[in-house]
Length: 490
Image 1 (cartoon, rainbow, N blue to C red):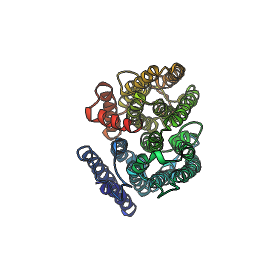
Image 2 (image 1 turned 90 degrees about the vertical axis):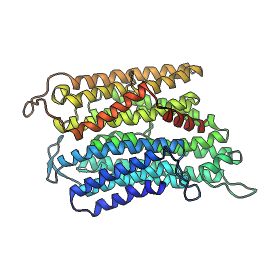
Image 3 (image 1 turned 180 degrees about the horizontal axis):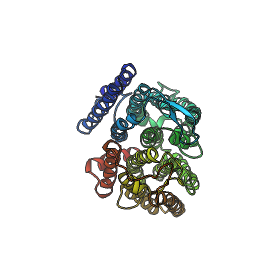
């Protein structure tokens, strides 16, 4: 089963580079997404057998993040069918500076998109720390061409910045793996293999100082990829310049992969009795990330960058929840599910708005509810969901984290958290509501109400429905999976 989950996107991704017809590549993209989603669903009935001496296996956290990735990829594949039809092979005019540019070949887009899915699947299955590092690095290499799909200087700069900053982070994470290997060295016997299960079982024999150093480097290294402040600087540019469907996957699925890397390291620290060391760092990085996001969201003039900073905020919330521990860990994992679905929905809606208005400026987009009724409604629903308004799922997960913090007597953390959330709510409301209402601009011709294709609205609407459902009802299988995953971190 694990082999199939890895081979399906890998082989179909390579096939897309060989196919000549665009229609054939799009069919392969959709078929691969459907097969991957089907295989992922079957893992909830029967857990796949481990492979390669337990290097590859699916545990509760891995299965949760694999499911998020597969669901988002299916939504992105459906959306891409309509998106790629609009992105013709002819030379295009840049919407911001007016110069001419051409897109990358469609084979590069569909091929890299499927290889991106393969790399993220490998992250969720990797229990060998070295292999996990390789998988996370692979996600960077195959997603960079997607950011540079629109071949102009801004997207090139964003892709280059993404590669450079994430490479620095991944280099630090590699050093963290070396330190972990030193911590696992047993002077009186065989070294402990760097496999998650072995490290947890033999955690009492790990050298505490080297283990703490390893965790710090892994946190900073993978935190760079996750978008934790102050290492988040690649994220706003990449999310802003990449096609919206790619931004949806970057924010909804890729950031989770780096988060999972940090969770694996924290899992070993907890087993070794060093949980408090990691938790204090996670609380600090979490609050700092939310504060930085609040500063840049208030008064933001680019709505795609606003969504990117919102991702920084929510990565901070995930870090804060795990750092608080206890019930907040469950809340953090639930928040990862809700945030991924909601942010992907918002980026897909933003893509529809950008296609019609041809501007990312919050001052030039008005009357979205009139021009694009469905996307406008999804834009409003997404705003309410992402800011933690009831009855959406993020309200439930944030409430769980706040309650856990209150139960622990962390009054200062609760006060700072709620104050920053309130500032972000006000900042996003000012942008989103102005865009949704008002009179549409008259450039170059008056924008009137337009019909929207099913392919452009159905994926976002489906994600919105799931987020709403998760706010009203948590399926027992998901609750059990999140509780099992949270238990592994305590």
